[in-house]
Image (cartoon, rainbow, N blue to C red; front, side, top):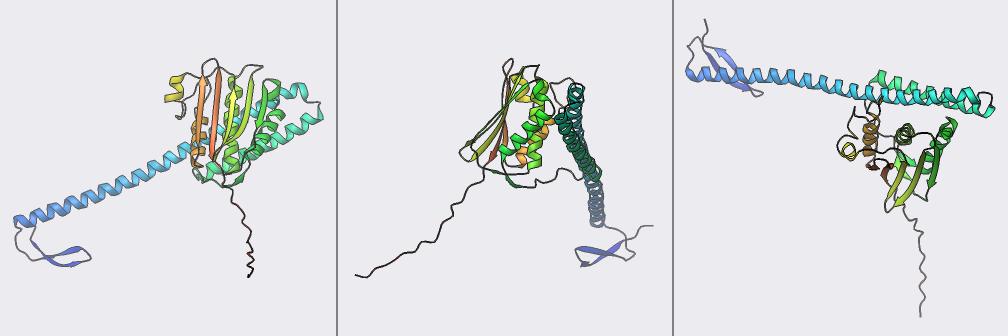
Length: 289
């Protein structure tokens, strides 16, 4: 049998119910219904919050896994190219040295990717420091030569007089590497890739251009930076999505120009470090007349 309870004084916002033995009135029933509804709502919200947290964690892990898979695919492509060139150049001591260095770097990157995936750290914040994009471009161009890219395509650099940028060198190197690999895979033998840097007001621009088949305007406008969308037969559709996320994390942006049959140009636009003027103290001499 249900009996009436008396509402006692409030304790920390919750009213205590004290048994009195009197029957419930309509107001009491309304109060109980309201309390029950609020308790049920709190329970549902708690469950939904937990499900949302779990869903978010899975989303982060899935995105991280996709990035790791894409990076591993790029490393495998680079190692595969070294193996192809080894058949012709294995007796060359310089090739042997370059190949060992390239394999060593690839192994180090693979270990770092596996550690990142195991720790499930998500997208880490950029480790920002003063970075010379000309140095980044030159080093990557040198590695392309080590891997034998120049045997298939003509790689050119046009490096201007530019200020430094505040950036995570490892992440920016990943962006440029992705853009170069996309250009390389789009070209036939004898194609051309140009890496260019220039300054424009308070911005630094690093561009990667190729004379490949280009892309359709509709794809550039609607699908190019979407994940899991690619024009390549075996592409994962992660590279450009990852590039865009990294560049925007540096308060920059990526601009694209492409025309079918004419080639493509990707421009990474980053804010330049503003130079401060070192003002020396001035001594003023006053002469009395």
